[in-house]
Image (cartoon, rainbow, N blue to C red):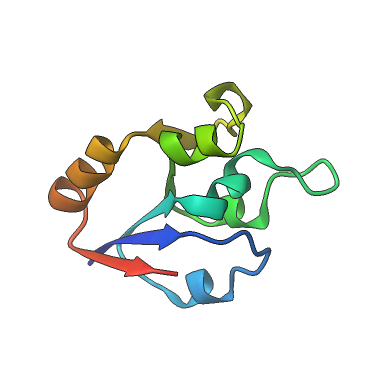
Length: 98
């Protein structure tokens, strides 16, 4: 199964993600979840970014929070709403909201 998981909150726990075992995991950071793409804890990237997955951050939500795409971790691809639709329909079989 190819799973796209939307993360809309900034929590440092990855318990739920560790229990998921899809063949391909995409994490789409939306809302306050985009902070995972930019904020570092004690100089290290968010624990979420240590998960084996493809990462995407919604550009509109970055801009709403005053963040720029240049501040996004290199593991994360900045995408638009249209890109998210393409990901859901072309790259992933299922979606989940975490």
